[in-house]
Image 1 (cartoon, helix red, strand yellow):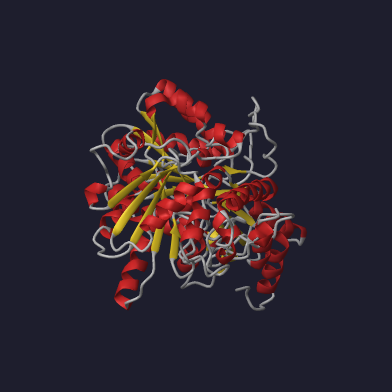
Image 2 (tube, rainbow, N blue to C red; image 1 turned 60 degrees about the horizontal axis):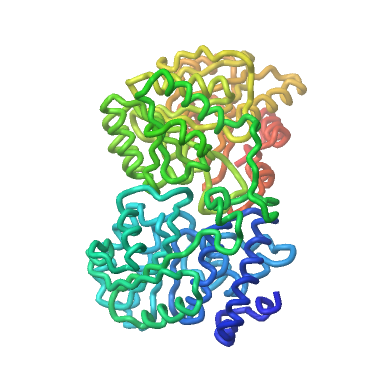
Length: 590
C-alpha cells in the first residue's frame, strides 16, 4: 500500500504517473478485497470500476466538478481517493460506510443507496448550475443494470434537453446483480459488438453525443476519453465496457455471488455451496413454490433484479423455467405486471425486499389495490436491522397497511407463513402482502388451520386478564418473553397473535375492556402510522391504557440491533419496567 498511503485527496492522485496509477489500481483492489473479507460488502461491481474512477479523479476536479454515481456499488475506489482509505486498509475503520454520504466527505453530493437515480439527481444539479451562472462539469455514472429502472429513462429523457455540460458515463459490465433482462440490453450488446458504430443506438435517439470505449478497464484510454468530454457544452454519453469482478478471478467467474458478499469469503477460491443448506424462510418459500408449480402451471414467480436477496437461486430459476420472470431493476413495473398477471388468471408471486417496496407506492395503490387484483407479494427484510440508512426495512408496515383493499399478513412461524402463502395464492378476493419473518424459522410442528378469508380475526394464544400483549409477526417471540416475565411477577397476561397488519379485530379489542386495563403492542417497524397506533386510536375514548412499542421515525445508519432495542425499550426487562410504572400510576415510556 505504498502509493495509496500517499493519497489523501484527488490532488495527490494528479501527481502520479500513468504507471504509478496502474500500481495504485492494484492497491485499491487489495483494499476492496480487504474490506469485503473483513466486514462484507459490494465486491465485484467495485472491482470493475477501479480504473474508471481513477481516471475520473485524474481528469476532473472534484468536488468542484460534481460526481453523482448510481447506487453505491461502485463507490469504494472513490472513497479511497477522497480521504477515506482507512475504511479499506488494515483493520478497517468501520465508521466509513459502504455508501455515498455527504456527512463523510464534500466529494459525495448525495446520500445514495437505491438504483436508477443518478441521471435525475445529476440533471437537477446541472440545471441549478446553469441557473446560477456557474461553470463546472456534472458527471453521472450509471451501470447498465440500472438503466432498466423507470427513473433512469425519465432522467435520460429530461437531461437530453439540457443545452449545457452534462456527462453520462454508462458502466456496461453486462450484468445487473444477476444477468440483465429486457430489450434494452440487446441494443447494448449491438453497440459493444459494433464498437459503438451500429445504426441502432438507444442513446442517440435522445439526441446525445455518444462515444464508446471497449477497453473500459484501460486506464490510459479512459483518461483520453474523459479528457475529450471534459468541459463539453452539451449532453454526452460515454459508454464504457468493463469487467465485473475485474482482477479477482473468483469474482470474475461468479459475478452474482460476489456482487455483495459476506465476510470471510475472499480466499482465492470460488466458494462451493453446500448441498444441504440450513432451513431459511427463503428456501422454505422456493421449495413451496416449486411444489405448487408442479401441480399448477398458472404459478409465476417474479423478482426485480434481486434474486439473491429473496433466495431465488440459480437452481430455483432453472427449475421454474419460463414461470420465473426477472423484470430487471423496475419494481414499479413489477407491481403493475403482477397485477396484470393476476387479473388474467395467473397466480403471481412477487418477492421483494422491504426497502425496495418504497419505490412502488403508486403502483400498489392504483394498479393493485384500486383494482383489487389478487396478487401475492412477499416482503423480505422487513424489520429493524444494523443496515445502512438507505436500505432500512422499518417503513413497509406504515406504507402498505394504510392502502385500502390490501391484506397485509404477519406470520410468526413457518407453519403460519406457509398457510398464509397457500391461502393467498389460491384466493381471488384480495391483494395479499406477506411480511416474511426475520431470522431463523420458528417451527411449531403444528398445522395452522386459520381461515384467512375471515379477515382481521386475531388469535388469543393465552387468555388472561388485566394486561394484554398484542405481538405482531417477528415480535411475537418478544411478546412471549414479556408474558413470561410478567407471569414471574404474579400477573396473568393475555397473549395475542394478530396475524393481520391491515385491520383491527374490533370484537376482540372491545372484549378486552371487560377485564383488562392495559394493552401492549409490539411491532418490528416504526410506530408512526403503524399497527400499534391503530389500536391506540381504537381505545382513544375509553379508559384502556395502551403502550405502543416499535421504532422511532428516523433514519438509522449501521446501528446495532441490540442498541436499537435498548433505545426503543424493546427488551422484556425494559417493557416490564414500563408496565410496572404504568400499573403504579407513574409516567409512561415515550
